[in-house]
Each structure stands twice: as structure tokens, then as C-alpha cells.
Length: 304
DNA sequence: ACGCCTACCTGCTTGC
DNA sequence: TGCAAGCAGGTAGGCG
Image (cartoon, rainbow, N blue to C red; front, side, top):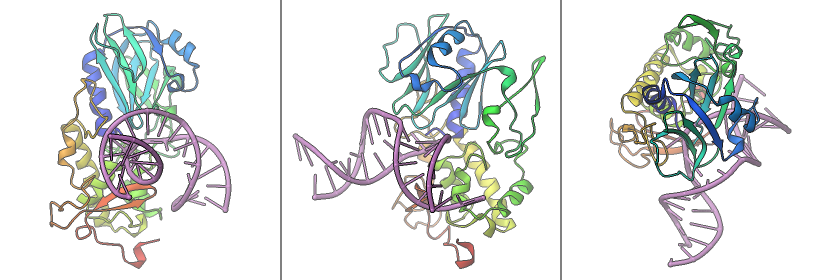
């Protein structure tokens, strides 16, 4: 579910609503939500008293930074949501972890399908990501304190909206891979944060067939792809994400981006560029949507 | 490296 | 109407 734009929206909402708040305690109703290294009981004990300093995002994970430098990671997976409930709000049967805030509100982790995971990490234990595989530890300045981000993310690829995601680097990395371009966009160790919706949208925008292999793309193809990935993600953020059934921001409101998608879940509907019906195929077990005219089928040399 | 499968879960939609 | 199959935004682990 939530991909980069949706997770970014949640993080920004939470930054406004809960930065500065103190967690008084936590009630966990689905223990497997709490991931290694903490057993759920220890997690609840250790989180009590923590004050949220800042909320942001890495890949598809929400990061809550506490004042003592510890970091709570919330991976929403398919149906996870972080919601702020006012004091006295009715209980939510799908809330798997409820954080009571000292001011009487609750921060609720809701997750119908129970795929999401929450972790609590020491500030110094997180190592950087700066650049995908083999990334070196990178010192990050955070207020007056320096600490390292991201052991959890050491296997992740670059953030597509960051300056480090350059065209040259993308050309280099794609040229060494023979996988289908759609599968690579979904591979978090290749690019962080792109999921099934935005992969299809980016390929449509770049006029690339999802079955093209990475090493068949020429420089102009990659240039279009690079721009397209960034554009669809930025548009998603501007519209506060795409909602189908589950996704909502921390304010509980759905995003507006679903209506602006060009291909995702538009099977048989006309392409906005050429009018041909959008087609659906399965690539790497994932449902994939594209325009058969705008995204021409790969020729023999471009296919596995 | 890569593809393919199975798991993890629940709820909604579709087709007979 | 009822019921089963199919579908869903994600990812980890195993096998070949």
C-alpha cells in the first residue's frame, strides 16, 4: 500500500500533530507488529516516557525520532496507518498498537492485514543508506548532535527525490542489470520508496513498456524514466497520496491522487494520451498496467 | 542475479 | 441470496 508519497504525507502530518508530544504508554493488541530486537513487553516499557522530537520518512517507513536520539520505525506495508485520535474518540478494532500521549490524545497504529512492523532503535545503532549497496556510513547532522541513521536501511537504494539520485548514476546502475524495468522499480535495494502504483505511472510517463529489460534502455529512455519517477512521486505528495480502500493520512482523510493516475487500476479505460484501452498484465507476480500504443512492446533484443 | 513460489492476514469484489 | 475464488498499495525467505 502506502508508497513513498503516502508515507511522506503521513510523516508530515505527524510532524505537525505530535512533534513535542510525550508517549505515556503503549498497549499492543497484536504482538507480531513489534519487530526485533524488542519483545512486545519490553517495547512497551521502553517507549513509555519518550518524547517525540521530529517525524520524517525513509523509503516507505515512517521514522519517529525521540529526544533521547532513539528512533521508532513504522513500516506500514499494505494496510498500515498512523492516526491521531482526540481524547475520548471511539476505539478502533483494527488498532494494533495504541500509544497514549501525555496530553490525552492517542497515536494509533491501525493495520487491517497485520503486515506492518514497528521497531525501536538506539540512535547510534542506525547506519546510513546514502547510496544503496555497499553504502558507507554517513554522518548526519541533527541539531547539535551527530548520529548515524539507518542500519535498518542499509540494504535500501537511493531516495529518488534526493540529490543523490542522479541521472548518471541511474544510467550506470541500469546498464548492469538484465531484469525487467518494472521489477527493478519495485526492488527496494535498487530504488527506495517506489511501489506498484508509482512504478506503473512512471513507466507510462516515460513511455517504456514494463517488460523492457534494464540493459536495453538507451540514454534517452533512462532520461525520461529518471524524470518520470520523480514527477509521479512529487505529484503524489502534492495530492497527499493515492487512496483506494485503506490508505489515509494521519488526519484520517484519503489522498486525492488516485483520480489523477494515468494507468494504475484503469484497465480497459482509454489512455489519456492516445485513447487506446489500458491493458493489464502480470509482471513478477504484480498486477501491471500500461498503454499498448504509448509503451511499445520490446523487440527481441530488449526482452529476456 | 534473477525469477518464481509461499507466507504473512483480512476484507472487498466478482462471477456463477 | 450465497458462496467460493480472486484480488489488494509490501516484503521476507527459500529454491533452482
